[in-house]
Length: 104
Image (cartoon, rainbow, N blue to C red):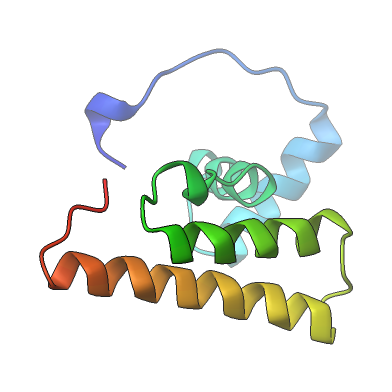
């Protein structure tokens, strides 16, 4: 994270939640702020389909999003399928950049 992209604000947390976050931050060798950002990023990921212009990548990300909307169990075939679609979409976007097409 670059400093110019960061904003500071006051956050009130229940004491027990703060303690749990501090414990996880320590285990993950992160600051409390970093741990909170990681947790929020996992819960609210950016929509990669909005930034990807390649039609094939957008379609795969759309399919993965539909699968994840049904909340498949971790490790299930559906969850693995969604992860595979996301990886392939990322690979397509990277390869399109490598050959010189503008993806953004």
